Image (cartoon, rainbow, N blue to C red; front, side):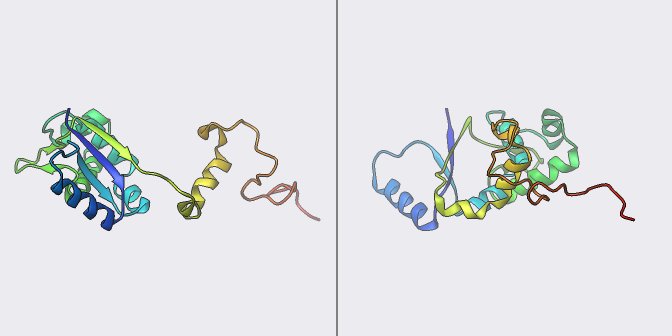
Length: 162
């Protein structure tokens, strides 16, 4: 099985890994695609583009219309996402327009540390607004404040003053 590892590493770490692989007689057998930051990873590999990679994994060359049919999306939107993936080198695009992701499996490898936690305030907001989607109980934690509210006063009282 041909596997690709998608990871978050600095350019220096990636270069050191490449030098180590060239020096050793036993490469790890996987291709590596590295992003220098989580922000870049999430910007390039949006949820819709992950969906395309999943459909392309192990499938061989596929045209954009076929790919759009497989993922149940509009051809134009799939074409735009496929162009983005091809322009950054994640998928191959042949002269006949077919797309190819030459791997049978994708392994995603990164570690989230405390240094990156302040970069994601929107995640905390999503957890606050949709706690069930993140496995939290249906009631909010007593220490959490709903967005748009202060204390126990409602955001809109609905009464007209006279």
